[in-house]
Structure formats: structure tokens, C-alpha cells
Image (cartoon, rainbow, N blue to C red; front, side, top):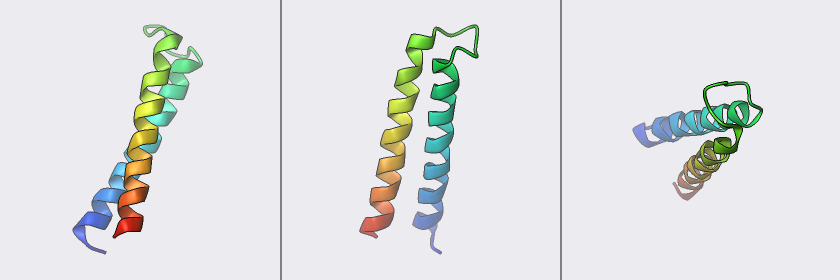
Amino acid sequence: MDFRSVINYICGILGACIIIFGLIVRMGMLSQVEPDRGMVPIILGAVILLWSWYSQKRR
């Protein structure tokens, strides 16, 4: 495993964590944040996951 693979795995894990955070916000479990704002982290996490997956397949 080289350095790029490790970075792609880390980005994949972080992308999944961002999606989970967005879902928590969407469900309204954080009282400080409006539930409508949860879609932005979900989209960002999905983009990160797709980019990580694409980078792994391209290599």
C-alpha cells in the first residue's frame, strides 16, 4: 500500500463520517443547528466519497 492509497482510505472514512454528521443534523438531534442545513454536509460527504472511490479505481 502506497501513500495515495492510505490518503484515499482516510478520505473515504472522513466522507462517511461527514454523511453521518449530516444525517444527525437532518434528524434534528443537534438543537443548535436547523435541520434544513443538514443537506450540505450530506452532499459534501457524497462528493468526497465519490472522489475517493474514483481515485482508487483510476490508480
